[in-house]
Image (spheres, one colour):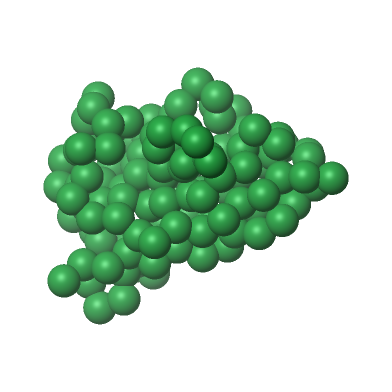
Amino acid sequence: QLQLVESGGGLVQPGGSLRLSCTAPGFSLDRKAIAWFRQAPGKEREGVACISTRGDSTYYADSVKGRFTISRDNAKNTIFLQMNDLKPEDTAIYYCAAAGRFGSSWYRVRSYDYWGQGTQVTVSS
């Protein structure tokens, strides 16, 4: 059974950076498109970024373009989300999700079959 595990969250000041990681112990992710979602208190879960199986195509939410970068290292079975210039509105629980297909519906929660437990990111001074 595929289980996704996120790490790298924490407390950071506005303008700071964090790098999140997503892996799946005992399961290869190289045939899965992987996305990062986030959910703030009282808000719906929203897509942040998505990457294709080979890492050659990506999608980003408008709110994070130019600040966040999604990447993957299939040899290490890990997907990353580099977050720079963080803002208080980026505060949320961040989840990684896996899907068998990569496409324009990447931002839809229902496009994904597997989810991690999430990691908290708090941006505050």
